[in-house]
View 1 (tube, rainbow, N blue to C red):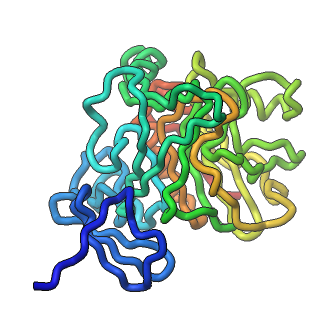
View 2 (cartoon, rainbow, N blue to C red):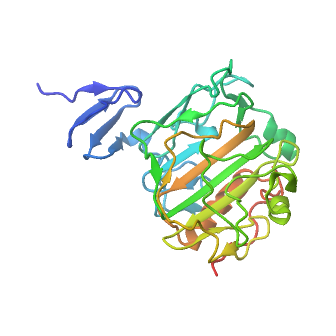
Length: 323
């Protein structure tokens, strides 16, 4: 009797032919290679119809209920959520400061990100922080965070996108001691009209060479809590919003790099140059419309309510708008 050959999520064939099909024994999923990427198919019990109406739902994800409070029709390419470290179930079984060697994304692809321990002299890897959210929110939020106080990063799964297209939308919730970014090589994608960069969060003053006003808006550290950063770029313009106040984006027609190109992310998730804490990263290879941007923003502000000024107690802030 013919059978589908087995593999595992961490050991997918490195050079598959178009149309190859495998059974992933550790996730109980079927994977099919289309010539460029893997497509992943869940058994019914893994394609959750509900994950709670307040979770983020989309067609190619862990939760898929189109009637949920936070449903979007477009699926992200990568969705890293510390509350789902294995990409499937709600994080459990960890003790505070346990090392997190593997981190899986929440899309159907279940991309596997592996700790790299950068720089080479680091003696430990990223760990899970089970207390920071409760401390920052006075007990209102209990979501776990990745504590990167060892200057670590996570290498991308070889089957995951190694770049982000010119048209993209990114959401991330992070805090740090210096400039931090969801990507190791933190390319300066988003620029204000005076060319000050704000694709990453700056904690210190203008001695870093950044615009002090923008810096104040995007300040984020372990004491004030993380900032919710939202960036969107199409083929001509990039925007970043001040999510604390809603409304129009900061910048505008000049808020983009002089050369619009795909953005290399092959060096991995999390910038390893400085200590940081990370809660969630959502990456779309498309420029979402403002309605879906607001849906994702509201989901994140509701989930992490109380952590900071941009994640206020009581949920979402006024809607973001396009010029």
